[in-house]
Amino acid sequence: MHSLSIASGVAIARLLDRPTSAMIGTVAALVERARLGLVMGPSELTAAMMFAQPLVKAWPDHWLLAYLIGVDLGMKYLLDGFYVSDIIKFVTDGFTLKQLKQVERQAFSIVEWNQIHKRFFSFRNALASVAVEYASFDPPRADLFPSCVLDDEPSRLHVVAVSRGGRLAALAKAADDEARVSTCDSVREATELMRECYREGTRVNLLCVDAALLTEGGGAEILEMSQYLAQQLEPKEDLTFFANKPLLVAVSTAAEQVSFACSTEAASAWDCVLPARMTSQLLPILMDICEV
Image (tube, rainbow, N blue to C red):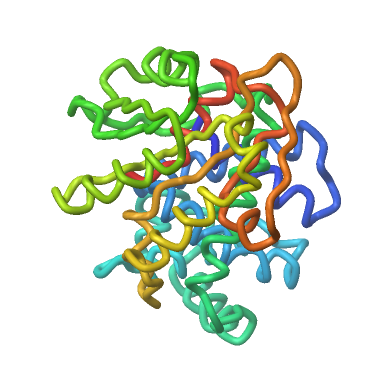
């Protein structure tokens, strides 16, 4: 099961004040069915949850319908040519087209439309943190989901591991042996690598930085990187810039958690700060969340 399907299941179960394993599993199964049926990537899953949140709050007794309309609005916001009837065709026929259209109209007055591009990143980062928190969650059986054709294309994931040892790079290769993995000794070196990638028209999807490297510099290097990315990737209302924004993650390669001090501005540059040591279980979750 995709990490964001589980994270969405947790998020909705918490909104309903029913964060039990059974409820999380039930909701996650629905999200996974939608993901497979509609071929949703991290952007689509994030948008679905962003639109679904106020609807679930408004209609807690009808959370399933609320999430489906969230999927509908999220897909329409990101893609051309999506129709509410696709929910019936590819996810569930439990509702009629008339019902879905009626609820969709009601949803427009509930959803918050201001600063969507900023809230989109907040939702993605929140889901990433939840996915890491529930790394050991046991998802429902695979036979509950529709069959799908697996993509046999080589991995296009580009991971940059910033640490003085080879552990992060080794974990990335173990998680996806076809991924491109670059290593850097400092955040400044990683920033230069990203500059080169942008000049060449290639992308960095995930950047993992050993927090131990930041203890002396007070986060100055990550702030420099954040400012560079802000210049390169000026947010656009249509969210197309999201695919070019690498997931910035502070990790620990020490046996226990490494804390580091930096300015509030620098701290806000991180998309995710892992609360524990990077492991072979956690890194695939982060790779799951990246847009490729």
